[in-house]
Length: 331
Image 1 (tube, rainbow, N blue to C red):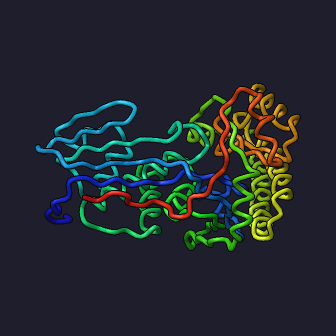
Image 2: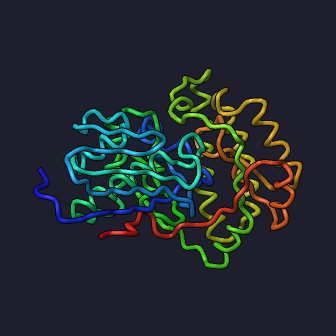
């Protein structure tokens, strides 16, 4: 379909994970396509990445290395669904070795890692075949694989954040997805890295499992999502004006709305960690992603990290990736 492959030996793509400040859940098709105002997420690509390598083999076999290793004669036999469907979509279906490497745990962390893997795979495989896809093409193809082909009950924010990079307001409706980069001064970006911290709960959970559960009260869920969608607008204004303390307080309000959507979003041990974070002087904190585990996004003054370190949990600053999915080696 795509023709003969060029004599490329190795491609390496680097694709960021993402942090959603406000609006998560409103990027699901069932909500954004039925609401008059659609869905909206205010999010940032962070400087933690998924690396994908595509290396030419000396034979026609396909070798895939991630948390396990697969060696197959036919790409259709690959168990890793994202690899298999990315190969199908790009036309690179034989004679390669594919490796995925994550800076932090690659599933269940609330950082959009599965979509970053898909975007990184597509970018690397397209580059291996001699093509240079745009960020929008990568995002749309990743959505098609994850939502259209594999039928995962997830939203569309992660694919666009990973592809475009930076800090964005992303809107979703029946007409498509629109990415608007936010005009944020360098000084504010520096403060974001100083004042926002990620705290790992030590627990992971599949986003598809949480998002696929039916709520006890559908009308209450929709009402909460409408409020969360409104928070995305407010978060955008706060970021552009540099009101990071206000944004921290908004995280607290968003978390209270989010944890009421489903019983699986939080549980006693997660609530305990949240309470400990707030007791150490945080302005606000919310669990990232669908919930059930992963990372809390925490806002506080520059001294809060020392206090958070006393919890014995993994913490890291929120650095911003400005570039999105990038080919860092081609040769």
